[in-house]
Length: 131
Image (tube, rainbow, N blue to C red; front, top):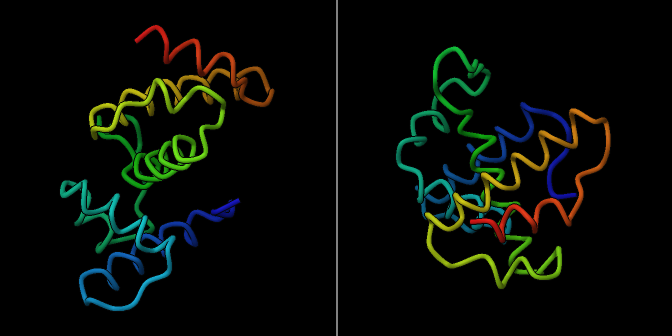
């Protein structure tokens, strides 16, 4: 597992990767991947450099930037590993394509969580193929 369950630790990793990127410092492979995702989301730069303890309630009408960027990292890893098998063929290569995959992944995760079960690869791939 790349990330632990601790929200503050996860957000700290994002902030540190972005700080190193901006300072031209040497980064680990994971930090570079995180910095690339942050770079793709200028609308979240303030969130990564600001109050890391802030909540992002649904009532604000805004998605949680850390969750969104973590989903990008997850999708990129799934595509690179072609796991579940077939995801690479359905992936596409643009940022917009990643967003479509994220929507499918998020829906699959939400559905599984509601049932108290592990996410099903087949459900995720079915959603992708319906795009």
